[in-house]
Image (cartoon, rainbow over all chains, first blue to last red; front, side, top):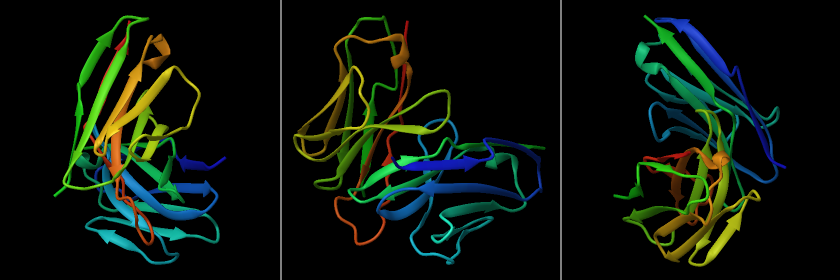
Length: 110
Length: 115
């Protein structure tokens, strides 16, 4: 059975802090790993990672994948209150099947 | 551009009543379609996915069912709701074929409360 584990489950920081969110996985027929941000309703896409060691970056957010150790991290620098959300990690396997982790609830206090 | 529509946005249903949530995708052909459920604002549980009309894969045993009567239409149903069916239901789509990796896009979600 495919498994995706995220840590920590929740995190409270102050504005300006840097956070690192973790995602480890055990799946069959890995194709890609995806990060999503979920605020009120639907998750919105952040990154898709398919190759090890290549950092994806978007503003203050960045992510990297390690296919040997089977994990990914999502970094957020200089956090803002608008970064408060649930961050979801998902792994795509063959057949376009996506397995999600439990998510990390990030709260950024002013 | 592609868009996904899901309705209704919120629903309060008594135990034992039927359910029908509908999802349509525009701007693409032969998408992969998915139904996910999210309980208590945590991770998403895959309920059903479909790679084509009439092709439904069920991930977990439950009293829910899914149908894909048209290429870009995906329906989640139940004949008799249980209290445990309450949650946030998300429809999603992805491209049918991708050389490596495939982003999945979500609808706005439907909040179901079974009372």
